[in-house]
Length: 295
Image (cartoon, rainbow, N blue to C red; front, side, top):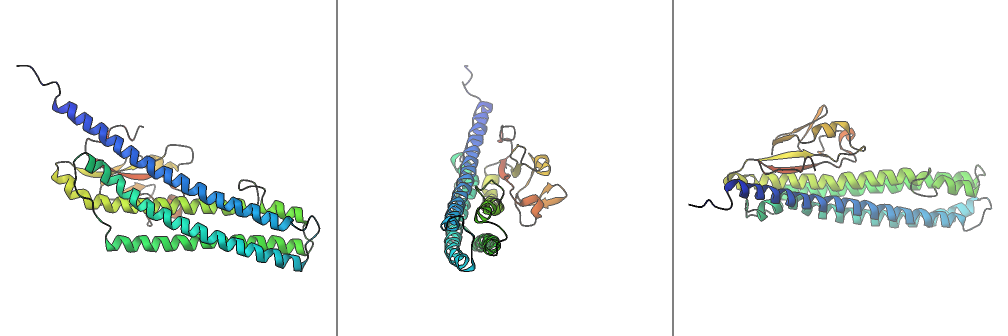
């Protein structure tokens, strides 16, 4: 009797490759959203920087006086209020989108491979957590724009009292987001807030979804855990590189340096281990994770 052209091992290998592919696709969406969100925020900041410098330069290179300073500052205050509103609204929208992508990281591979047929809703508890995080992120953005207001006001005050020239005031604000000046620090803080808070929502959503899907996966006959996935480049913390590939139970904690966390950017982590973190905890179906860690 002829042997079948495909055996159980072949089918299992195909399943593993498909699982890898689905997880990779979900991760690509998460990182693309993060990068687009940060790029949009930095573009808004740079447009504000250019507008503020234009306001300062309107009167030419003559020294400031107090009257001119007040008029310029009124215009800058309005511009910074607009910036705060835009950044806050964009960040809230991005965080809510990342909530969906965090769910998709778990649901899509499981459902497409027939390991689960349930799409779980967001619990009331998770909805409250998300709302609190969104409000907190908006407060942090407001803090950034208020710090910008104070820094610019202090620079213009020094110009008004003859301590620096108009051109020096412009230079201190910054010729770009990457050049030395007030906006370099503002941009760095805004980028950290966007990256950390957007990806924090993803982590929380993914953790909640893994917990919700655990019974379905077990009924399908597979073990269900989670694995720490780090971005392997020079920006990644040594403690996070060491955590790479660490696999634990859904409700167990990862060891991250001397700390413990349910997921990357866990609020239980210190700022030193969470701010600007780009790691992800991915759903790990026993024997189905092939090349993600090495890829």
